[in-house]
Length: 311
Image 1: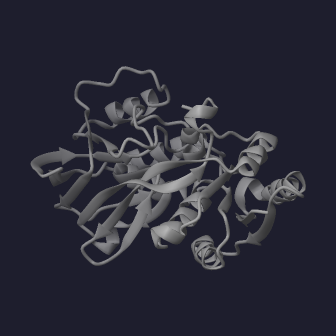
Image 2: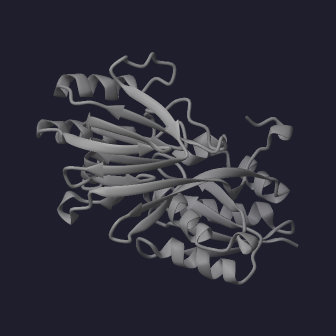
């Protein structure tokens, strides 16, 4: 019988994730053995994942929001590839953007069946590094400058839930002067100089629960997408953020988009940044350079495969 380790964030979905864990164990009883571990602090899911991997389990399942999935993925990606078990996702947060990109919703019977079948697909990730030696793996998106500041502000708020909280954080952040950076970019070996207020980098098509900044991004094409917004008025930036609620919108001509396998970012101002929705860099830390390298197909994920009717 296959053995899965499920890592539960009891704070996700206002504490209702514990009910999901009980239901998951009952549904999988007799088909898959599930060991349930609960986190008590930020970062602990990464540690528990590494410990679970060392025992030789057949998969590690994140039960929670994008933050929990990010931590579990970072624990898995820290392991050697030949002993790295697949990632499972039971979405139970407010955003669930990585699960959305995989085609996984909150139908828990279907999700349990997915884990029981054990079919996986390979997805990309990116290693993000600073010159000071800090590093994270990203599986969904990386937001820099204004997006990073909005993310930091959102983690100081407690209402409303979901994308409404992000919109509130965006409006509060834009009351102040938006960041303006002169960026020296190296994109797949090509040198670029840009002035920018927002730099959004994505593996998945959605972030913040409802925002399609890079709607064409794919998890398994070996590339990350980016969106770069030059300096603009507060009103124009608010309008672009509002428009990103629609996946089928027409992108404004003044927004630059592209894709890459490697990117270096050098900024003339300290960077604010989040990784997969988790705050990472704060301006007061004075980090001004990032290196991002895409790792194609590096992570196996329990998901609907193309042969099963997935996308």
